[in-house]
Image (cartoon, rainbow, N blue to C red; front, side, top):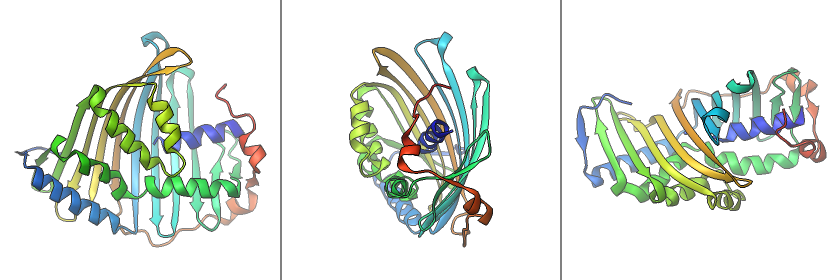
Length: 281
């Protein structure tokens, strides 16, 4: 059970079009819109999010594995708390699973084991590490900040209600952007990401986010990533498409973990949590 907990935690972290009528190339306009959106998202107290992702990975077409994931999340940002429901489909292995999780700063992290339905409470030591990771990842304005350094690389279209800002790049030009975005993983994670970066060959990154004109809220993001990485001397290609929808802005007022989950969850200590960490299904 413990190896499944670690796998689904990693999947949880991995993790972000309008009808165009006008093309805008003015960098000053894009920067102003981006700054307004960063300010608006920084004032949020709560929101909901749906993330759908399809990831295909393998050394060739014959041995590729496709993982489809859908995550629905409700979040309060101060104090940080959330509810998450994740469904996963690992096509090659015929695996379908779903599970729920809860987190609050005072009670900690509770996660459902996807096959047995048993709930576990993660070690308290994990809470601080998780907080450093999620506070940055789940702060909407942080997802936009890296693009301020790439204003000249952005293009914008707009319709009556939305701005659509796009960044399209390829190859080595995107290495710096990838390193910049990896910093969103939180304190203590940068070194791990940079070690992995040294073995990556980035072929393509396409990033599009849609901003509502009236509120400057970021409503949607669409991301495409293609890269090759060296894993134990073997070249593995990764292709991922993700779509993020954000809604229910500032409409969530309270958050509680059900009492039956708190009372019946199995508490894991650090040794329990780290034992048997492997991906042999």
